[in-house]
Image 1 (tube, one colour):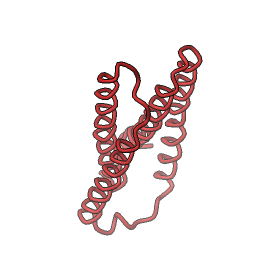
Image 2 (cartoon, one colour; image 1 turned 90 degrees about the horizontal axis):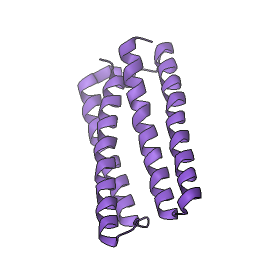
Image 3 (cartoon, rainbow, N blue to C red; image 1 turned 180 degrees about the vertical axis):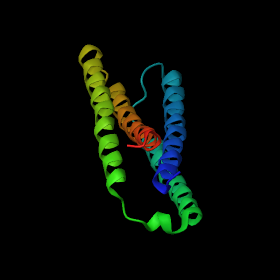
Length: 140
């Protein structure tokens, strides 16, 4: 397994765990309020802090374990994989954004619109790493 594939695995798992934490907090607050929780800066900062700190730790550990491979430039195959994965994940973001806007048009809940768009951003990044893993495994 290449260094960039290991990084994709690590980052995908980090984003899944951090996203689950964030939305568990939002759902619990929304349940207590009886309606959709407004965006909460504490949860947003907590999410970003969790992602940044854990991604630094995971990438440092992977770089130490991989040695020189971590410093190697991206080759032609890896460029194609990264381009395709980024392209495909853009569709995930677009579906989430249009879904949020459609929902906002019907119900007019701006708080839910924020959470749907933020969730779409999370899912698109997770999808990008999943597509990278798929393409590395497929041998593109």
